[in-house]
Image: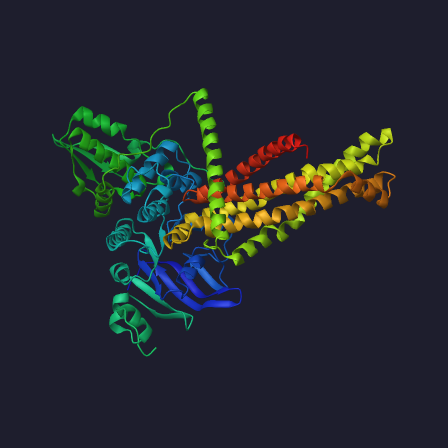
Length: 254
Length: 385
């Protein structure tokens, strides 16, 4: 197991929309420099969990810690300071459509650093070149393909060299090759920059290719029913739900 | 949150020692903490060094490198490109593996050369000309589109249009009943203001009773239709453009087309019919409320009784006057709905395009109303109506 320090620690968290409970009693740790996968069937609450981790929604109860700081209790500047270390790649890229790719990547740099415009321009070009979009600085999101938008979204998420990167369904809508490329990129970011990466996905090839650690969310029991390296889970898990999921099979009797 | 950064330019000697050990290699000793927040390192001194010493290769020593981020990578990319240009061998292997991989990654896809065309500076006359031409085009588009809607309407009459009355009914409720509060408020105020201004002017002549004539005539012939039109252009025209524009962005319009359903039949016609039916009703409603507004002023400020005011109003207007406003409002309805839908269908495929479509729908809609009103004024004058 990974003996690195814990970066994100989730303590007995319940997630709910009003009175409707999505998940309860979630407890897990994410260690520095690992790729942590949140998996589970469609609609089980993976993205909801992600939204809570990054503070887009408030937890119903429990605490989320970033390092030693309690994220659930943090507000205003404290929360902003935590989020400065975090980059997020949304499902469809979520690029701001009224800005060019360069302006999209530049915005976090302008907001959080005091760098000159020339320096920002250079960093932006470098970030775009990392995701294979060199020369696309002056394109608008509407002028490029979905896969490119996703990569540009990644360049924006990486703008501030975040310590933690969140990916929401990174391979959805990508062809197998682009999807593999993105997986490789994720692995390289982990290896080269030591970034902690949290991925929400249900793509099996991706899960086995990148995950160091994972949790499996179940919609019926509304909690985590398995955790660990997915390869180990495949070998050792006895829970039929986890095994069916990881083997891409289903029980014909229901 | 205001932060203070030490934004003095980073001194290259704090981060890099340049030394030349052998004849053919220039050695850069990277050291210290490379932090993006402190700014980027200028690389001109490396360039000068290379130009002066003309080494065969560039080698890096990284033992003293404490920590690094993108600022180091940007610096190295510059060095790499410099080496390529000057024909110097860039010894990548002397860098840590992580940095090597990231450099390789950043160079793996060649730069796309076709950027955006620069916008040329054009003269004022040229710009005015372009605006004039585009205005002509836009007018032609509106008429063509109204023609298309008319053909779609003919299909509906022939029973061949893909049209759902249930959609139409919902839209009617949206644009009609739900618009009553705002139409009431505006027309009440218009009636009130006209009566107030009229009263001040007419009272010294003992002609206060003619406030009723003023309000009634102005409301039913002009203001009722005009104000309802402007409200509907802002409220409904923009909503049509935004709805259809968003459907365009999310490819819902394409889905209709590929199913063989005409977007004009399915999306535009119900909206045009809804406004065509609702506008005259709203206009009549606005007329009543406006006259009521005038009456409130007359009862409170002038020495006029309720019966007097009503009788005076009745004698001032007849069905002819009332129908002028109603006829105009029908045409305004068709114009507003068609323009709103047209701008929606012309929408680009981004969220900002939806905003522009809605703006354009309101501006074009109001312009069209004013122009149409002027045409009607001439027309009704000519036929003495």
